[in-house]
Image 1 (cartoon, helix red, strand yellow):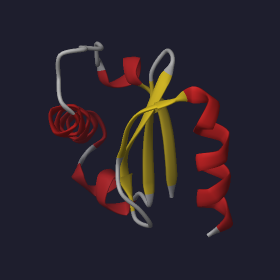
Image 2 (image 1 turned 135 degrees about the horizontal axis):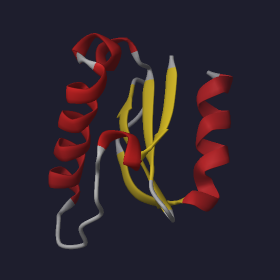
Image 3 (image 1 turned 90 degrees about the vertical axis):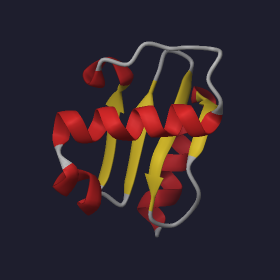
Image 4 (image 1 turned 30 degrees about the vertical axis):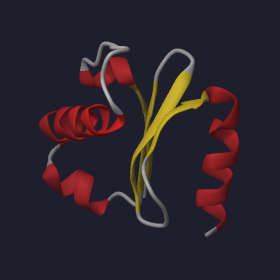
Amino acid sequence: MLIVLNSNKINHSASFDQNDDDVLTEFRQKFIEKYGEETYTKAGKIIIVEENFFNVIKDRYGPPIIGEHNDMLADVITQHLAV
């Protein structure tokens, strides 16, 4: 299952002074609070989209990605669907 959602849906506000691990932890916690552990566990990939960047907080087939420019979003989704 592929989940793509706007960061506003989990009440995230951007902060430029966080490192990648902190951002990843915050996104995961907020996602689980909103949608539950079961949804998080079942998902193969979860992408959180911000204004100019996206974050892959869970990927069954690869590492998390923090702060990738939205220009690459379609490619990431296409790669996931091709697996």
